Length: 156
Image 1: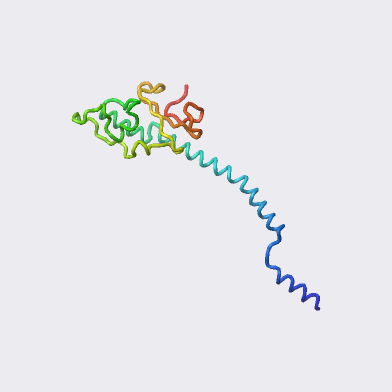
Image 2: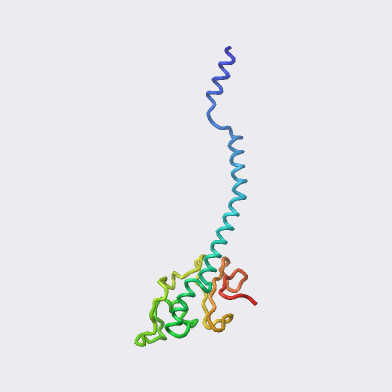
């Protein structure tokens, strides 16, 4: 009977995990992380692309502000005035004429950035939208004119 009591005491005394058990758990967690992290990162990029597409789209907030500006002033702001003309009156417009009824957008121009913290590119008259304006984000690579740019026109 003494042997049985000694074995029970050993089992009762052992409270920690062995190094092998800890290594197995860490290995399993690393394996799970290898699959989960890329999936989460892909979802984040998809969300950012969606936000940028909404911002530059024909029914987005910038497009709405540009339409109101055009309704009041008669033309879109030109490239040199840029999107800043939506927030504060451009120097090309005489304040006494009272045609500028802005601000058309509350966001200051320096805060009007895409999900990658880059300024939107605005050109008016547009190269692709000749009767309007071109508005786009440089996309995740932050380089202008690459395949991942998010634009307000369809490629032909």
